[in-house]
Structure formats: C-alpha cells, structure tokens
Image (cartoon, rainbow, N blue to C red; front, side, top):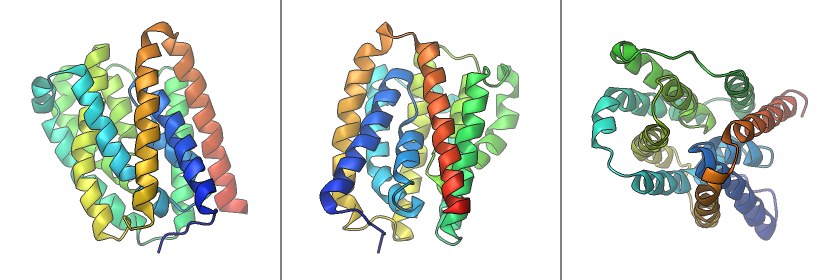
Length: 253
C-alpha cells in the first residue's frame, strides 16, 4: 500500500503542479519531467509511490516528444546498445529501490540533482568523438539505468551523455525522448512486478498525464522564443536547491 499522507484533493493538486512544472520544462528543453516531478513529490510521498505515479505519464510524454520531432530510425540504430544496457540497469535499480531504506534513495536523488545541476551550469561534459560511442554505450547505459531505477530520475546520465555528443538540437530532443521511452517500457514492467503501480497511484497518474501534456504543449510553443541557455541554468539551479532539501529531509527529518 503506497503512502498517501495528504487529503485526496490536496495530493491531486500537488501531483498536477509537479507534472505541470516538469512538463513545461520538458517542452522547452526536451528533458526534466521525471527529475523535477520526482524532486517535488519526494518531499511529500516516498520515492516508491512517486515512481508509481510517474511511470505512465513518462512513457506517453516521451512517445509524444518522439512523434513531434519526426523519424527516429537512424538514432534508434545508433543508440540501440546504449538503450539496451539502460533497460537492464533500470530493472536492477528498481529491484534495489524496493529492497532498501527509502531515505537512502532520497539522499541518492538529492546528490544526483546537485551533480547534474553542477555539470549543466558549468557547461556539461566535454564533447565525446563518435568513434568512442560503441565503447561507452554499455557502461553509460548501465549506470544511467541503475540510477534511474533507484531514484526515479530516469535517463539523467544518458541525457548528459547525449549532450556531450554534439548532436543537433532536434537530434538531441529526439534521442533523449527515444531513450526514455524505450527504457520506460522495461521500467513499467519492473515497477509493476514490485507492486509500485496500484489502484491508488493510477488515478494520480491520469492527473499527472493531463498536466504534463498540457504543459509540454505550452513549453513546445514558447521554446523558440526563450533564451534557452539562461533558462536551463535557472532550472538546474532550482533543481540543485530541491536536491539539497531532499538530503536535508533524509538526514535530519
């Protein structure tokens, strides 16, 4: 039974807010929905419950993102091994999530948010030449999957890795969406097998889906009119602050 401490309406409003913020950011910069939504929800419910709410909106929003950009055949072949390794890592990480003290998951998510924000604000990873992609695909995919399964911030490592490959804007948005969708198919099975999707989380997933897609549509429209670099910096700084708060909550209560 998931922990749902707030009154039903209050929790639904919190879910709508969390996924509207995450969906708006995703519409503008191509990523950020799970990380931001999880960071907000994890202050109120456990990561296990939050992930049960997250998984369905995550799948559908990434499918929508892929369709918006266009054909994906070339990138699917290019990053097939990366995504296969991430799927294996996601299953492993999900098993860990449902077998350890949740406070360690809060600390892990908090550290991940801070580390990711630091890399992005400071310029991210250096450019990786395409000839090294094959050698890096399995380790990057496994690490990304395990971290995503444990914390609900699916694909953070892959998102940073893809940003280091000097892809075009559309290729990056498409590659991130494709990776999140393919690995999400495996993740939903792993979460279901561990009891993370329940009759309590499904209605909240529906609320989350509507809020996320509506905000993504708005974000996509304003993407071309916003100074994206400055906006991303502000978003990642906010994420770092949320990560610090999660660590504080886990350590001091």
